[in-house]
Image (cartoon, rainbow, N blue to C red; front, side, top):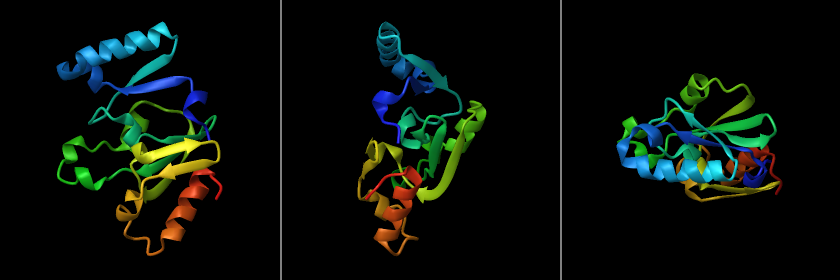
Length: 147
């Protein structure tokens, strides 16, 4: 698994740039990234600014896992629920990735090499899994994490 400090690019929602509510934050953030020579790109076709929640998780140099993103807290706000497949397609990402039907907000994942910590909300978001052990096992396999 690729951890944050091993990545070389930051992806931001274009909304940070186009929505006046975020102009100041966007300017300060891009200024900091530029000062530290960190590449960044703005993603089109996002419906909210929290890209980490819905974008794929990097597990190797050119390999990603995309979880389904349908969090319960956005069920009444579909206008804020970004479809990551649309973002990947519209931004022409050229990488292989696995797609999982597991419903998981990636903002609830903390990773380190072969380990991940995920909030227990994943159990509530995936009632189709009758076994917590099976859900954990499937996530471990997808993310190439060890028990």
